[in-house]
Image (cartoon, rainbow, N blue to C red; front, side):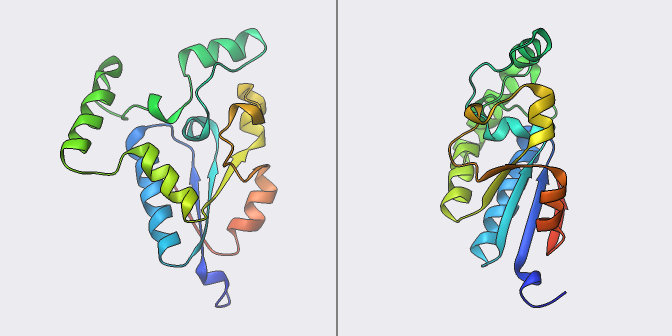
Amino acid sequence: MNETDSKKCSIVVFSGDMDKVMAAFIIATTAAAMGRETSMFFTYWGLKAIQKGNPTGKGLFGKMMSLMNRGGIDRIGPSRLNFGGIGRWLFKKMMKDKGITSLPELRQMAIDLGVKLLACQMSMDVMEITREDLIDEVSDVVGAATYCNKALQGQALFI
């Protein structure tokens, strides 16, 4: 590994849980603020963090999945103690009361720091999510091989 490679950080986000997505964005923004070239690869449930939040899917299963597990950063709930959405509200309130940066603010901070947001093409195909369903700031929609070529040039983390 050369000096340039050690300045890269890549994070795979495959969970759509609030606490895990927050950890991913905290690490990404920290790495970017330290001068690391940083990318995040959102796959499967992790795609929720970069979706606009509109209903998705064209076929029956895609529409059903969208209905049961709608994307959008404001809809992400904690991995535990969600209680049908009450936990999401409670965690957001507790974070606000403690002055903790919100998930939408963390995502915007990552964007502002130049973190590359990459969406997994295969996951999008399976879940019937289109490019138009993602936020405009997503840098690219890529496959695993493209992502691996980027990630293997530096440090990779899985969240």
